[in-house]
Image (cartoon, rainbow, N blue to C red; front, top):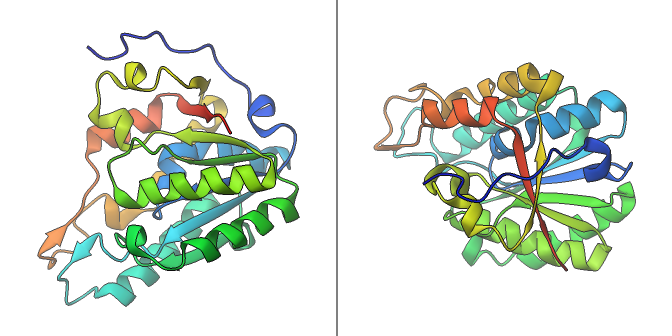
Amino acid sequence: MRDAVPPAPDATFEALSQGAPIVVLAPHPDDESLGCGALLAQAFATGTGARVVCLTDGSASHRGSRLYPPRRLAALRRLELEEAVARLGGGREQILWLGLKDAQTERSTKVQAVIRLLTRTCLGLGARSLFAPLATDPHGDHRTAAAIACEVAARAGMRHFGYPIWTRWQRPDFRETLAAWTEHQLPLGPHAARKRAAIDAHRSQLAPLIDDATEAFCLDPAFVEELSTGPELYYEIPR
């Protein structure tokens, strides 16, 4: 049964950001909008500021395409990320594109370098809160991002919040699964339209834009609807 554990009271942006710039770590282009679109929109609108850090190049979502081989697909998804951030109120200068190979981060030799770079980025911004996917998400890149965030938060002395993507969608009892962590629920409020527009910017993930792939990923419309209309959820990960 979904939500056997009751949801937490609403949180505020001020409490989550602690009045400082926020850093959102996304495993792929689109996770930032799906998980943190309203949070980012508020950061840009209030002038608090944010940095969107994209871990992978997104090049594995459509395998076997001749029209969009990995390099061209990665370029397309980078443009989609830039458009999404623009729709949230930010600009290219708010994006840090790390470009690790999609679906290969668990075997990457670059993770330690990413941890060092992200730690420097957080400290340089004066950020106090780091947002990354939860380690309970089944995708390997999400687990890698969660592990990176744990290490960075510890090194930089930051609060670490995990946002559920696939955990929220695939587990009807997700709140029971995550009951050990403190839930913070952020209403979309006036930023709902910006969040939906940002998600829609990731066109390659929403519709059969690439129709010659042997393996193609497409977000379930019901999943998009749930994350576009429901509150954003953040679980505080203790250091």
